[in-house]
Length: 464
Image 1: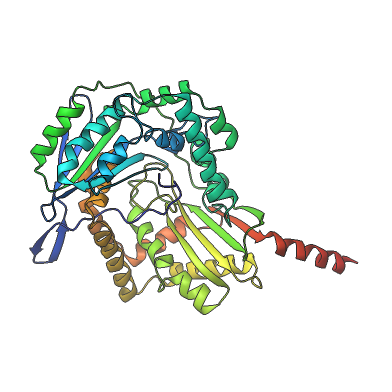
Image 2: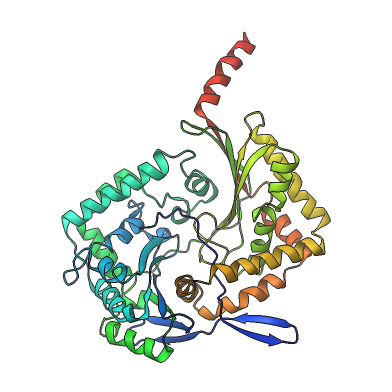
């Protein structure tokens, strides 16, 4: 399935009905919601432009709530969901969806795990049957568990241990920035924790977190809402609700002292530096402003950090990052989040020079604000990204299900353009001054091992 570090695409708006008003065209996603007696919530958005359908089943369980001592367990369990059930053995789900030209996948994030399918609308009924079947139970066999433990460990080898930079800008940055285990631990997991998981753990996880009352289904496509609700009732209605363990409070205040760390990398060719700041929480009045600021700083080649560090000072060779990056976007989380910046920089430029250059760009915003033309361009581009990102039915269904699961209201997707449009230059200055401070910052300097080794003899020679 999709590796959990894969960068999330935009998620908010849809290519739906456009209502012309005096103030201009407004994109609005039609949303209908229904909750079954067992607590399962269904969100439907009709779109009859194509005889296809997108489906997303989102469970309100992610890396933030996995058991202590079982790092990586939420991701491991995501893989277990594709190992079949006593009724539909491994491979049946793939055959049903892909055999008709559809696609399917799954992913694990901090606050949710999602399972997505896109197929001709004629496949909707069998897809819902299969999703209900694996919500009911799985094939809890030693062979399946061992197989998926090995698969996840291989992902770690490929994507972390044998990859330049090894996702330090996610896992190590989180460890440094956060104080609570829920937020700070490595969601990919350690080999020791993954190997210690047993069938009892897997069965208990499914029982506790994979019941209908802990899930949301999003359906978008060529089907009437009432028809979709009836199909979900048909296949999921008999599943009983299950008690869901009460989670701990993951919220954290802003940091009050800068934290720094230096690392070496045996596989990297150029040095890198990652910076992160604790960012506004979900529902914060600063959330939209941080989303706009993130795009202003590093959203494209016209961004402040690209123009300032790559083109202008020429200390950097690449800029990446964002709000709730790399696990998601500015809207698909419910716990604490970070604004993260990853800079690959020239070997003859120090990490401190990069940090200083970023500080200078932030100070410009803090002192001068952002001119009206630039702010309008950034907000327009950000809203356009939402629209184009939600063109596929599958993306729309996933956005609906996540919004309902994380916000309790799928209709909030229609408010995001207004939130973005209302952001002012003063809002950006306030956000920079509140969150992007030195005391709320963490910095990791990661140097190629060959460069570090070359510097050591030179330093020793100077001392002599």
